[in-house]
Image (cartoon, rainbow over all chains, first blue to last red; front, side, top):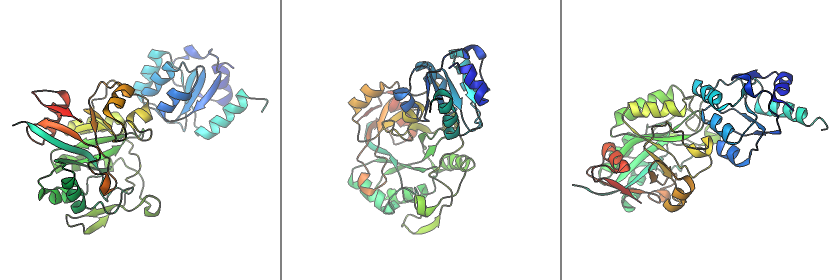
Length: 113
Length: 243
């Protein structure tokens, strides 16, 4: 599924440039421990987190994620968005909690149940 | 004159809710003497209120207490702040307190006992010291540096509440003085695993009396000040560290 379709259907707010919206999303990973994300997330994943530190841009780049969803309407630091734009990482924001957005995204990515 | 001083720069007291209530100033100082510690860093979670009692209790053993605290950033990273005097530690405490939401629940987290040098209870700290401040890690380090303190990332070999566990790697721009490893990791293992660009220190992170001095760093320095420790960490003017 394309990132743009997910963004539209889940009402996610785009915080960075729109250059990566045509990327394919292969799955998702929810975690706030960046060491765990480095170890266990996969290429093409949408990463769900409440961390807003600039290191999230580097981790998403390193793991070749399709993008990051920041939950609970948390506002990333300015530097985080600057780095994300520099690295071509798409950052999206939702008012949902990690649990709720994970459920919605799971249903979207696995319509068969 | 330069000489070796053994330092355990990360000790909690009975003020930290997760700490054994036996961690009174006298008992800590006595155990530190027994373990041949010359410099103690007193670093309770988000508070320095037991530092004065420790300074007084350690004085009779000629142990130097560096006033400090272990600040929790909003990313849930633990950072040690260490100073030469009480004043900057209390200044940092004031900043942290104004960014520390919540109240302690003694049943859930434990008691937060402020004591005098004799171990008598002065009062119970009501703040949620075990919680995270709303300061970013950069803000925490900036405040420590502005107060001329040492900033050390706590127990980077642990998954929880560590700079590397929470944030994956050490941000390039972060002006910290050292990275701390716990006694469970050897220096060789840490160097191979983290390939650090910053010096490594070892400390006990003692929560129980028996932990004190189980991790330490030896500083070859002139006197027991943060300025000398910083020089040793940088390998300047003949100062150095060993483990």
